[in-house]
Image (cartoon, rainbow, N blue to C red; front, top):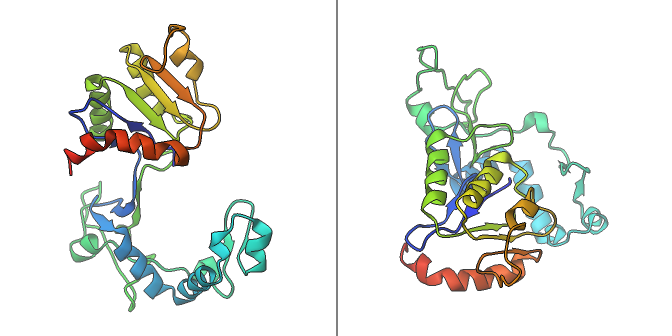
Length: 241
């Protein structure tokens, strides 16, 4: 997920445009479900998957980024990131239905009441036409909700500066907000390894005497610099605690 953060005026909190992974959201009723609750249901519905994950955590396979070392410990992954789970084909994977839709099926776009069915264990049934949960993030190819789009634009308009952390701005939804900030002559800070879309345009007209107050581009690891950034913002963040 390409996330974008707007560190705005001290009177405004941080906004994460593309969502968060701590929750699931129903694509039909838009109600959210805590990720921890969803994970517990997944483990219950897919015991072989849960057992495999526990084994990988126990033997340290997930502590290494080395594919050969992971494979030696039983974690075999394909180039696209898919993991081979022994004796657990993807066709048998089951997941829970949205509890809100299950209790009260919503109306569909055509005006008819949706059908949400589960099996004896509570797993979502393919005969259903609603009640599907997804991570509460905007996936590539999806549209951003209009209220989120408007809120992000308003945050930029009311900000005194903008800071991009860990994003290439490859997605237009993120890049256009930084472009909006540039058009309003806001100082732009970028903390990201590798290239950033259109960054040459963000800094082309900066004065040579600039020491960061007019904008800064830092190609460093966020792990190293982000703690210091957070310490500097702590007085602001504590205001919203």
